[in-house]
Length: 526
Image 1 (tube, rainbow, N blue to C red):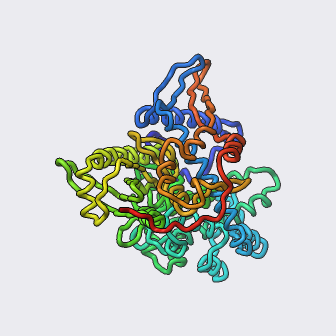
Image 2: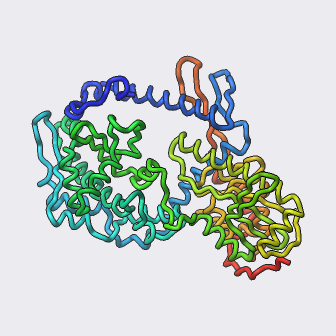
Image 3: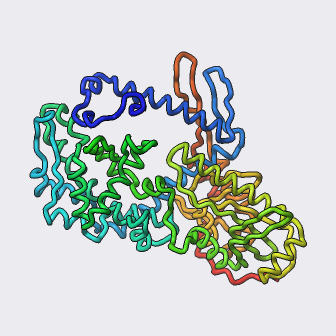
């Protein structure tokens, strides 16, 4: 909006309006901007999702009219946070002796950091950080081993990619830029940010005047290119990386600091180091380039993992089935059969959404999957069609009335939602259900199968209305959040939280403690 109305220029890198920051005006503007964002989000909910607006005594309540929608979105974020905690706990022992970037920054500043920080009085009085290019510093940046924070990030990325850390770190993001390349750039500037902020907290003894002017440094384009060229030993790659991570108001249309945390103004770059060091650079570049971390052969690791898990549990499995029936194209990602139970899976490997626009993309994916499953379910309801496809697959030709469907998603949102009657389940949860059948809590682990041995009816129940996802939904409670726009003018949004005490009581009363599982022998399918 600022670029469209006022315009962005190189002169804006020189000074900031300290008066408006101190008197609270900037905070007031940001609060109003946040209200506009909430209005825009409400508009998107009404336009793109199953939502309606209801007039209340206090304002307008925007709520979903599909019962499972709001709980499924809230549950997705809750499960993501829980998985992050579990992942960190599991990795603590492995990373206990691994040096962290924060440790490295403190050590670096204590030894030589102050040599690279100086006070300059023109064009304004401020502290500046020179990018050190001495061999000892470059060796820290080029170190092939990962620091603690980086290892944890890679662990999460490998989990999301359904692959290994070794594969992910060398995977290509775009062109010749790899995950390792982007992580090395993030290491460089994260380390500098930590050193610089560590110094600023100690340098300004007379208040925060200089601190305020120094927190967002400005660098010449040539200096950044020189630094990156030394890191990569490649000037061309340095230019590409800098362009991928930057927003140029004269070229780019959409600006989001999380995706492009550098702001190019003329021949200078505005460098919000705190934002840069906390951004997911790999995800941002992939999202802007509309690409994913996938094997060279184009296969979907999520779908492959589900196929492997189903086979391990004794299912007959077929993938990527394409047929035409009555002039209608039918595509099935995974078809699985065991003991008279047939399951049809549609796989949607989308990013975990970070904003309302991305949420809309994920929702569009599952709506499309629901339509595909409805066509497939209708097709398989015909015994003649069943026999024909079973015969082509080399399966026993006994027909079945037990047909289950599932939309398997790579991200955790919409877990538990129903699309045209088809259940949505996150792929990691399905894999855990098939491979272990274990629900982890802080108190104890619980068994999700009926017994210690898996059987197809367990999967049927899990995808049905009586599975443990339904039990979790029963423990979720709504809260109304209000955003005030004036006297008795409130925008109300409903979010769901998980009542942990209620869930713990339910698990203790209705679920058995987890014990070591028995391997499932191949099932009879004749």
